[in-house]
Image 1 (cartoon, helix red, strand yellow):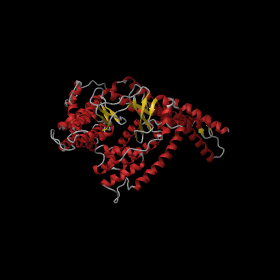
Image 2 (cartoon, one colour):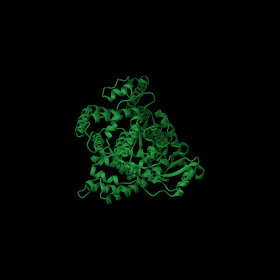
Image 3 (tube, helix red, strand yellow):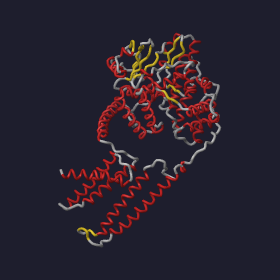
Image 4 (spheres, rainbow, N blue to C red):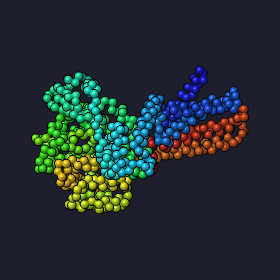
Length: 610
């Protein structure tokens, strides 16, 4: 019992002393781990001394010094590793539980892939081409809703997979049986805090549509307003979190082991996909996008349902009900003139939202567009959408303009300006010139010209390694789906012609106009970060320099004293100069660790480099 008390006192003393010697703020869990490391080191020395000479006395001061130095070294090591904060007990328990759940799921997926003949390694008898796409489709369908969505993304984003592999993935359907009515009613009752009949005058428990993550019900408010109620399926966040984790690890493995994974930066794709999926798990994000689109589409060629924010939340989204039929069901009853006019109206409304307001709907397929003979087309389901800021919108205009005009120099410059990590512009310009050679010249349209252009742009970004913002792939996908939808209504639909009306300069600023036509941007005054907080940086450098000099001097003198066995003995075989040298070396080590800690940890208002 006494030993435990002394060990606890030692750990507490170390936890209090080490951060103060380092001159840092003590974080509870970091201090606990450092104290544990220091106490373990001291106990190890005590045990080793007892084994070497049973019953030998070990100076408590020496043990305390060793413990403090070990704790300081641990803190410095954690900081050198990027400021790692050690996890607490609850975090460790959750991590262990997650590891078990993840390992079980990973084993299931590995077995499933093997059963369908899929492997990271190329095998002589493995599937190829269309057979590979079909095997991948069947495997993803069995893996669950998240992997079905991943397969849909792979199929919809041009250039990621060869055409013969991607084609079977279009058969993946994100449809599942609806959640039981009792679960739906319980979720809504918990959300509103009152019975369902107090919120809605009527509620149809049979969903209009049911997908893997959400389902939509028809309802009527007490004032007579007809609404569509989108509900996140109960329990879906917990089930998806494990699969997202597994998907991220699988992406890292693909990028490490395959040239294809490195070429398309599959880890980045998986990260963007996870962000999009998590955004779909919070219907408040969709509500904000839907509200912005409704305002932007006011009195425009298309309509977007209004949101009822007082009835919506994280798991529930209530919006006005859109009359009419989905475009693919209404199309057979339209005459040629009406069908052509409808296609142009849909394209005009979609491109107005995109090019003027920066709202990119990723899935304008026929099911998300409702047609009514007495109302404009309605654009639905903004669960997968992107918002472009002013700079991204200007860059998009420049990319599309340069592509339409066949200008490789402006296209390369526009891509690099939009990129998160620009590449060599001359190399990119040559790649753009080769790409433009494969496209029809302006004014000459062939079948699938627009889809080919979008595919070529996606392939270009992959082959050159240029990394565009996550919103840009969403835009390319939305434009490709838009063209496919409009072609079902009008076989002669020309997306390029409609884009031309929307990428012309309107009310852009002078800088945007200059960028649009390829002129150099006006120089902006910049402030050299080396001069920001320069005085604070110089003072900090001087202090660290003095501490380093003191530590080096103390260490040198202490080393000299350790080699001199002279002066009175203060213990058996220990001279006073040796003791002073030992203490000096400990002090020098503590000073050096303090210097390292402050050198690697940035301070507010200063910069780490001159």
